[in-house]
Amino acid sequence: METKSEIFSQRLIHAVVWDIALQSFLAIVLVFIIQIDLIHPLSWITSTFQDIISWKMGLNVILLGLVSFFQAFIYGKYYTTPMPKYFTRFSMFLNIFTLQNLIFTLLYALNGYFTMSLYSSLAKSNYNVLKKICEKSDGQCLNEQSLFLQLGGMWMGLYYFLSAHIFNKTVLTFPHIYQDKFQQMKLVISSVVSKGFQNAMKPVAYYCVFYYIWGNKPRSVVSEVYSVYLEDAALDNIINMLSSGIWIGLWFYASLFFVSVNTMRTVFNIVLTEPIKFPIESERSLTLYGALSQRSQFTAFLGAQYLRILAMTDPVRRSQIFTLSQPGGHPRNWNNLLENCLTIIKSFNKELESINGENNITGVNDLSIKKPVNISPISSPYGLSGTLRNMAQSPQAMDIKSLNKDKNEDTFAAAVKDEFNKFLLKLCQKPGIHYFFGELIDTKLKFILLQAPPVMWTCEGLAHIVAVSLKEDKYGVVQNDLPIVLSALVNLKQSLDKLSKPGLVPRKQILNDNLAIRTKAAVLSSVKRSIYKIVITFSKYIHDIPLDHDVQVAIQPFLACKEP
Image 1 (cartoon, rainbow, N blue to C red):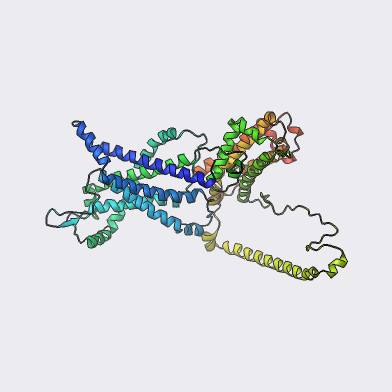
Image 2 (image 1 turned 180 degrees about the vertical axis):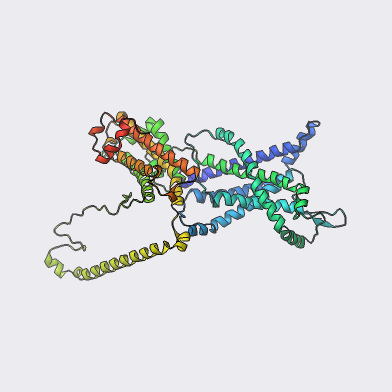
């Protein structure tokens, strides 16, 4: 088993290889269709084979492969680091101009250009060269149709980047039930192709309007650089543009570009989300609880995904969770797993409570809960020890005044910081300032719900492990923590109910995003199934479990099977 960085790197390389192979296959199919000749099938096959092994196609495939590798590297930055939190309009605006986004903009523009050049060269058209031989005079003239398509390819890359990465979140979509890679590709390929041709209509229309208004400027620049002039009718005239039919070619090549980039993103998602078996205990490899402790949307998702699969289908691995350490007889595997599972659940619950306006939030690392410190008679809070006579003679006694002084300075600094934060909070409530710097609750809620899949799998996996422990846990290590698990699930269910019931959530927090709405319903359903699983399994012993009164009241509908 590799480390988390090795796992991601190997999968990313596999995804790039799959992407290049699939895009090359689509290019071969395109050549085969373009050169179709049913009357002369032998020459049809021969010409197709010659184009496939030509240096032009090889060069374009290599260039697309290089762009895919660079994009894969930047995808790694998205998937291996925690998602950034941008909850104000000002922070969202600044996020657009990050170095990562600027590099991504350049790569997508190059990808669009190379894709347009590849498919236009395969079609044996003159649209991949900017100069052509003049028909009415000697010399070379500007091929404006080629300029139109090449600039259009760059625009398609920019448009896709804006729509996929700026105005939408880039997240991995983990399937609830994983299928084989080939099966998933067969299911999505028709959808990717149809959506590619549909999604190309709007950016083509935008680009035609742009070229109609500003098309003379890039044409003039290219004409001066190459010292050529325009012989044909200019395309920045709407009649010439429509009559030339070049916009149809742009739509066709743009559709192929959208098919290409959507194929890349789909292949990446399929390969990266493939389940992986994490060991329960290991000194060299990344363990299951180690994966759950990660905060990246790649490793933590894989860990929670495998926890659910293990809990439902692998009794051998489950038995390792219930074992006791030797020597010592401590349930270390279960304790480590439970700690990380509760951290995921409570962290998510804490975020929901902040949305619901709860003031008394009990976090995972609650600093307000302090353990009492037993001070022996000879100990001192200043690190001094011994009798009073020894303290009087000790040079360390001179540090007491400096310690008290430092404590007073820290208290003063905390008070100043608190007053400054209150001032900023009041300042941000001003109408004009609040519009740019005020926190967007709806955006924050969507961000929180994007982190929901590992929470769902953790709840379900934990519930199944607790349920099967009634028969498989011969040491009873799980039943000892049953009240903690039930309390965490019930608290999460109550926080989700506050988001679902009308009247409890302000109008400005109501979601309008379909994905977020479906995710919220899925999380609530998953938590309810988890509570049902535990409560029904332990229904005969539920009154013997030391639960808080609020938790006992909350699980009564589950005991009666009346919770919808």
